[in-house]
Image (cartoon, rainbow over all chains, first blue to last red; front, side, top):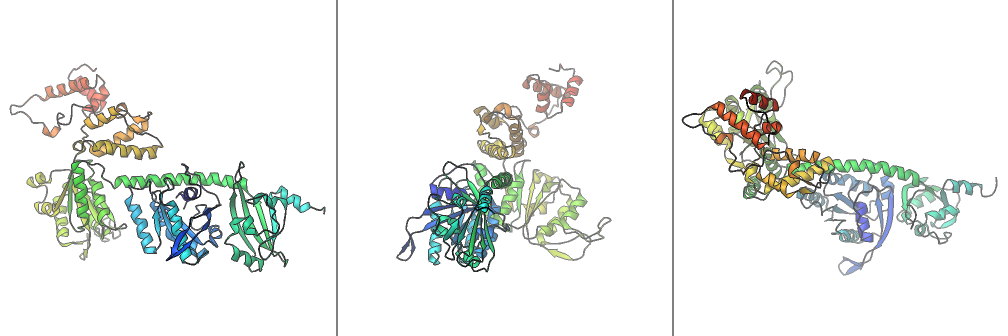
Length: 165
Length: 461
């Protein structure tokens, strides 16, 4: 989905920066970030070098999307808490990811929580979806930085626990 | 053909290429290939492709398939490369199978920056429009489903709605002046107590004739009356599993009241022209701005239906009794209309706040919404000012402003002509001699006002 804040989350995570305004991403922009060591299991620690693919907010049925997803170890799937329709589109996006990268792990981020404190219904909807799909999720704000690094850590842990790269 | 002929063509077409070993290391490449590398200073020959072009990490399986000739082609479109001090470069990255054993992969990089920029502009505009539409829709829904304010009456209503949400079967009567938000309260009750997809069916009993209301509510079978050319499901059936909201129930005819009472007691009904009974499960909400007690006393409303509906009653207070909540509601409308009209009004001036607080708001929240909407259309300042708000006069306060229903004719009677003359004179005085404003104060058209001035021989200014 477009405009949910994928680029802003990556920018906050990698460069600790936020820019107001919306500029749609075309294609894909790759960046790297070395995570501090995290606990990946009982007594186990690991360090992750993320190669992040910030991809265009394609339509669910875009043929080009699968090529971007092939080979990914995990996906942080982002919904916009101000737009309930982005939550409704999550199942299709996740299915698409799992088809292209069957071993890939998924975590959810409900972004723009700084603006959505007054929309408990949308937050509740994401919570329900995450519970039904057994997916970890965090409410994030690229603007304030709330839970941004944590959501990537959650994904890293998922990948480590599944034995991924 | 001269040596380097193809090199020149690739260079001119802004294409880089490299041949790759089965282990995905670069065997050879043209000079332009280096333009796409993250670190262009490094020699590329002998380097693993993944080090030079990190977008290929994770593609090992796909590239092995191409090297083995099991897949012919693979492409990633619009990869971005940012270089310090230069514009972002966009390129397509493609892989082809070749028949050479030592170099079974051919990697082609095609610069597409100009096309990508055009695409970016188109998508940007499309997405901005879609984002705006989506935000407007969400904000509208948020406003339509929230009772704003923190005054005692509003807090009580919120608490009552929360309690009632846990009792799905209760019939609820919403009472309040016109424009106090009865319909909104009904929607809140529905959303708080029903599933997301449960139907909310609303009908205004005062807006349609009795016979039509009956067929709308109960539905009909084909041939039930002259124009019944096909069977039709009624609103009772449509609301099955959700909520039926009967707005202005005080205007329902006695005959229909009897039918509704029967339905409420049995939860069963028959479509017009049918003998088969149907049963539905729904929550019934009814509202009125009329005094049902008085209607019952006058015989215009069935007492038994009144008691059936009046199991739980929520009184929606008039806006004038909500104190500073008026300002909170006004601000929420300003925010909503900022989105609608693409404006950046930040709030209200102190004078505007005072004007809003002193006005009586006979049309309640609906009138406030209209006043803010009108002000937002014409306002040019950073905040809405008193002059932007075209509401009735800022009178001496709610207590002193008499409502028509409070007026009592003295036992000895009085001259209607004299009263009319006095009202006309007072209105002109309050409006500073402006006839349009004076007419507005008396809820008259300008022509009707002038006609009355002439009738009484009063000066017109």
